[in-house]
Structures are given as C-alpha cells and as structure tokens.
Length: 209
Image 1 (cartoon, rainbow, N blue to C red):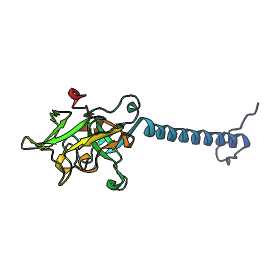
Image 2 (cartoon, one colour):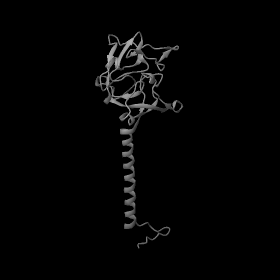
Image 3 (tube, rainbow, N blue to C red):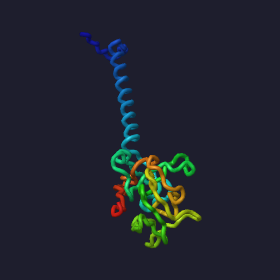
C-alpha cells in the first residue's frame, strides 16, 4: 500500500506520480461529464423538445413577439397534428428569413377542403368559430385572400394548411400554399416566458377534429 505524505507548512508541494494520476483521472471524469451533458442536451433538443422565441406579430394576441414557447418534437411521431394545433415550421425556401422558422396554427388537414368565404374560414363546408383571432374593438379580424390570390384549397396527403391568428399580418398558406408535414419542427404546447404568461397552448378547434 502506498501512503502519500502530507507536506508540512512552508514545505514545497511535490506532485508525485500518484497525485498526478489522480489529477488525470479527475480531469477525464470532468471531461466525460461535460461531453455526456452536451450529448443529452443535444438529444433532447433534436428528438424531444426545443425552445422557440416568437418573432413577428402573425400569432397575436395568442402569442406576442419575444415570448418563448416549448416545442414538442416527440409526440407528433405517434400523435398526428390536429386542427387547431400551433406548430413551428420551416417555411418554403422562397419565404425563409435567415433560417428563422414560422409559427402558425393548423387549419386544414390532409383531405380537407378549405375556403375563404365572406371573411370566414370554411372547412369541409363548416365555417370555423375562431375565438383566438386578433380583434380590434372586440371585432374579430376577417380572413381574406391575398390580393389576387386563391380563396379555395384542397389539402393533399402529407400536407397541412396553416394560418396565423393575426390574419392581416401573416404570411401563411394563403401566400405559399399547403406545407409538407415533414417541414413541421413540432407542436408548440407550452408558453414559459415571460413568467407571467406561463401556461399551455391548447388546440382551439376540437369540435372539427
């Protein structure tokens, strides 16, 4: 058994081979812990959940600029996106801004027929009641087609039709059409910052699911 002597006060500290090995082992353990932590964090962001900062006003007043939401990337693997879900998506290439994702609400599912009629959204012949819409003086903003744009869409298999809640301030499927489900990053389910806005973001269109 090797016993390492304790230096007396004033005596210079000598790094012995035993102490050197201990320091080396400690450094390796710290490095391994840091690497493991980084890998776990990366895995969580890639496969489970990811924070997202809201930019722009297309989802007002449901979500305001500079609020933070947590995006669920796991459950959509077995629970398909539903009408009313708020999702983060990579927009078509022509509409990308510095790689910043969009955040919108799912309105049309695969196989749906979506129409804009007199300021209302009609899905499969039923006009949607949309209490989350941006309003002025208590009056909900109408959903109008873009200038010269379409007012009717059929949602193909593997696609979704998405709109912002602030319809007059949103680039969405009225502009770039339906989006591929593979372009969806995940489902926004929790607003966590600022702390006084903390809460879940439930879908609002359960009646039409």
